[in-house]
Length: 161
Length: 397
Image (tube, rainbow over all chains, first blue to last red; front, side, top):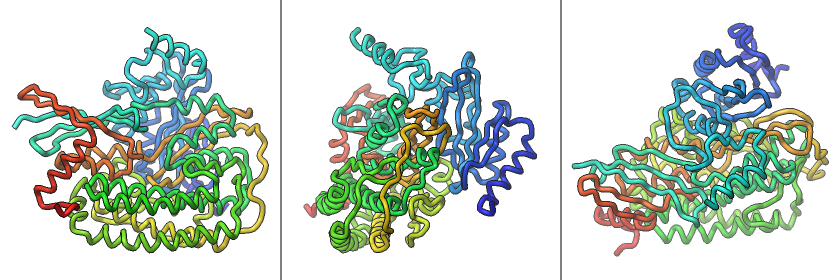
């Protein structure tokens, strides 16, 4: 495992510092670390990463696991990518903004709001992104319960009016 | 003087990526700018969840008309990682070859567009003529000029033979000569210098903070190139330079791109001279086992990142695409601040935003309550005239 020195070191540090606040932590290959984190520790964990040189938030991927929605924050120091997975219950989905740590997150977080309907606490009101203005309210297309046929029908009927 | 707000964009049916810039002007100078995106959301991610992995290759290829190979390679990288497919060396080499040809094609295209926005139409004609050579190479190898369709899960779909390799090399030799001329032009021609130096400033610190990627970041002295940082395909075995420049302006972005052309020719030669023997693809079952993966790829415009999650069937659970332009857009408001309205076209073009962008500008005079509509073409003309008055002129008239 000599190849993974850097990854193992970071993993150990996370295990010590954040014991009990994550549900999954593994190294899938060189330069890839995955962590499933409890939502309350999100901001603390990201400041910890940033202090260690992980300054580039590549993007945020939203996901729908059925009972839970969530987001994966892909954070890198240009070499190693740390994927921070945070879940939030589907009946009241909400995540805190990471604006203070990664100011570039805004468009990524708006995507979570639009496409998954996850409320982002602390994100100022703004226009829709990436969905168009006038897109039916409450329809979040990347949620699994939204089926393509029905979505097309809804949008078509709206256009006819 | 009263400040004026100008919305620039967003719609034109002929363009592929409309966006909108709100520019606040104080006289000729821009004192604030915001970017609004999302006018052309096509729902590719949702569509990908409704197709199988093979169909998704062709869907993802159409995310972009220029970086088509980049997006597919990035997506396929994820799928192959989940499926634990051992891609043959020859396939990796061919992917690298196409990737670099694509970079040459994209940078030449950009050079032309940038020249056009400056009013230097001769150079636009030159670079686009030369770009045909590389498009011919791509067509010869893959059968297509733009959407190559060469990638498949587990390898590539077409092999390359000795004759084709020879043809590519001869075309590259021609392009290399031409590029020498462009390097000279871009670094010495006083009119280009006048239009690009100290325009669209992006200091190193800001570039890092605002997630600039690709040539935009490298022109601000950020040493980042995924081909070096996290090598994929066969980039770890190749000898090439990571080009950076420290002028932090549009000029730097021109220099970085023309010098990257030279590096790409170097890479293409190396790949073709040591093309490994063997099969070009391995069979990968239609059903991909459960798992998830992220792949980072250095597209001509910068870091492209895809995420794929599989659920054990032949249809992916989730596909996420983040193209480099979205990352680079964060820097645009900063670059525009303090610049002249006449510098807007070249500054926006300098991040190489798939040249979709803007085409309509409404000028609203707060004092007079008057609205004037500019389209992109008029704004371009305005910018050329503005500089002509200052003695910066490409036409000699």
